[in-house]
Length: 250
Image (cartoon, rainbow, N blue to C red; front, side, top):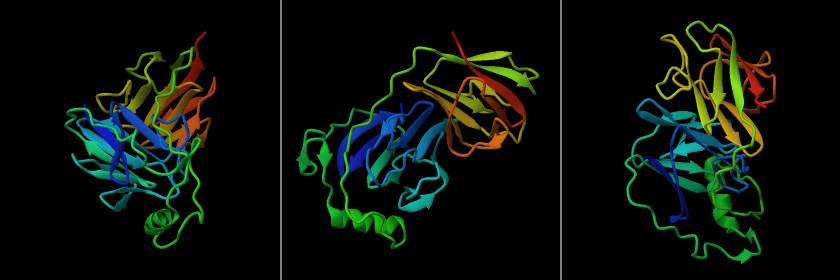
């Protein structure tokens, strides 16, 4: 299975298999958490669209780079290097043997759970990311390993309430990640040539469900959906002409 190999200063920290989608960011509700001030709360995602794997920036502050070029969305090729903050993620489409982690090796001086990163290196990298505009003057950050959040006890469903010809009336959101789009991997398949391969992804974590817009036009409760949004019971999604109601079960 394709994987992302997380590195810092050319040292391997972790690897993460890429299934339907991996979200990358500073908060613990991401699949791949990088707790670092140069990384946005929900920075980027990598998702499968047919036979391709695509990286998309989620309107992050410092941007997402592929092979040192800033991108909004780009199809990944085997060996591509994705830069998120000060960390790199190598895309290994072929999978292969597990990577030996350098977690046990001292990357930086530690004090409890706090890791002091080299200030000059941080400034230089952020200056490059922001075209010469350094971000924070001093750096005091924790670097934790990525975790996969636990799933909530309750599950949810999407009920089709409009534009649902040739669709079921209800779809269970049992998986960690459920996609909506015209791609083969989608839980709800959109019909039509102009429909996006992946319109939204709905991820399930310990706090509930989060919807992320990945392509096309999506509204939630009548307002345009931009980036990520935590779903609440009764929320209404309108995705490329299909209207869905989010409901918790039980």
